[in-house]
Amino acid sequence: MPDAAAGTPLHIITLVKSVPDAQLERRFTEERHIDRSEGVLGELDEYPLETALRIKETAEEREIRVTALTMGPTGASAAAKKALQIGADDAYVLTDDALAGADISATSTALRAAIERIQQVSELDAQLLVVTGMASDDGESGAVPAQLAERLGVHLLSQATSVELSEGRLVVTRTATVEQQKVSAALPAVVSVTDQANDPRYPNFKAIMAAKKKPLTELSLTSVGIGPTAVKPRAQVLTAEPRPPRHGGTVITDEGDAGVQIVDFLQKERVL
Amino acid sequence: MSAVLVYFESVGAELTSAQQELITLADAVGEVQVVTGSTTSDAVHALALEGVHTLYTGEGEIHAPDPAVIDLLETAVQETRAHAVLARNTADTTDALARLAVRLDTGLITDGVGLSHDLRVTKSVLAGSYTTTARVAEGRPLIATMKPNSTEPHLVPGGAPEIVTLPVTAAAAEQLRVLERTPLEASDRPSLTEARCVVAGGRGLDGDFGPLEELADELGAAIGASRAATDAGWIDHAAQVGQTGVTVSPQLYISAGISGAIQQRAGMQTAQTIVAINKDEDAPVFEIADFGVVGDLFEVVPQMVEELRRRRS
Ligand SMILES: Cc1cc2nc3c(=O)[nH]c(=O)nc-3n(C[C@H](O)[C@H](O)[C@H](O)COP(=O)(O)OP(=O)(O)OC[C@H]3O[C@@H](n4cnc5c(N)ncnc54)[C@H](O)[C@@H]3O)c2cc1C
Image (cartoon, rainbow over all chains, first blue to last red; front, side, top):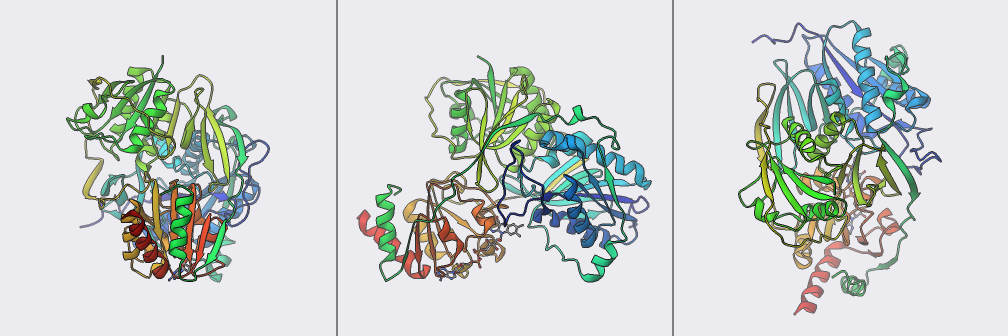
């Protein structure tokens, strides 16, 4: 059967975030925002990119463009460049001073405006599929995809562990609270994928060279058509205190009685 | 007193400990109203508690990913004029509350571990390295998801709540259709996120969770795992503790054959007491363990089991 949607191009917009490296010390600024002055492409954002690229590679008869979109401080373009190296066709970086300290609400508002702007300028007249990670590696709320779907007025399929396009519809396996679900939905949609979804690829030398020629566009709030009041946070962080680091306690080497010693310790700590 | 709406995905014959905690938290900041998309006939008995006034449901079952869940929540907020909406921090409830926050044009705070009288939410962020307090903008309702094991449940039996059916039904399945449902494996053990004690194993188990099962039996513990163990298929993915698994804050976390990578630590380092067993003395897990044993888990764990049994008898 011919693919019903084969004639319509598909525009996959993947959201990627520049996050502080989790292997290094991460901290809050004096304004109680997570310090994002230096960042890397979030590990969890490699999975949605891979999902997008696989959809593109398997649907030969359909025009598919994979766009990476990131919102963040000036340095965030590094994450967008990495996405281009991994395989995105083009990339957009939304940067604006008014977005410093953006909460979930502000982030989803700005991303919605950016996505609508990108659709306009891309002149593809395509169906829209937004693919995101399951959460950002720093804020970790996992709530932006749902808010974005609500604002765009499109379907939400979150926590996907597999994503396929079949006869123009999305078929997703997802992990719900008490069950595994296989769900089918019409486009447009927002899909968030987990780290169970695939094994992300690494860019090779050729891809890294090719990425240099791919378009990378900077966006501001003005260019996506919204003002600073639209992105006023609806939640504010009042205090951010570093937790006293956990210290290692006693470490013993087993000399044949370590099991008994653990039980002694548990009894002493009254956790039995 | 203004209302606090508590959302449960489903309510059965007995409340889970996480549900009991939510009611306890809500009761401290307002008049408790419960809304759910799925109830059994015994739900009203489970909710026969002092402070719980009303149980709101829709017409028929309403489950994620059906967006009617958000209609149900929105209608319940209108009905109760709640100044706060609380729920557990599962992915499905986070989605629902996130979308509700858009409709109500208010703030969302996820993964709270504490709630103050003036609706400030405490949470642990950046893999447990910071504690923050946050609140939503003045004059708007608080929408928050809370982690289990955040408070001690304190409930007093009371009269049955009034049941109110709201005019919300499941959405037509044409656009968004669930083709298949497979229940996640149920276990007789306490649920991982709610358990007071978690016994977790990693690659060092080499495919054999047997010794940990026995230890968990002795301690009444839930079983957790590292991603290496779940990826290898030795145990269900639902057991994964960490950044992309579940976050646990039990009283006791026993880690065996797990190196303690940052992604694993993100899910367990707010445990009260951590015990680690690893044969590599340089394993990073020892940096956060209150009691560490450098040794072979296949010797240490069975000895623990034996000793626990001996002391019990
Ligand atoms: C995006 C992303 C998300 C991730 N999310 C998670 C997550 O949520 N949770 C998670 O756990 N990991 C996660 N990981 C993986 C994480 O980085 C580590 O790879 C993983 O935690 C390692 O698991 P492990 O400690 O069991 O295995 P290893 O690191 O291989 O450690 C095994 C340990 O067992 C010890 N050992 C071996 N045999 C014995 C024995 N007989 N007795 C005692 N000790 C023994 C070894 O000394 C070693 O320290 C994630 C990774 C990525 C990239």
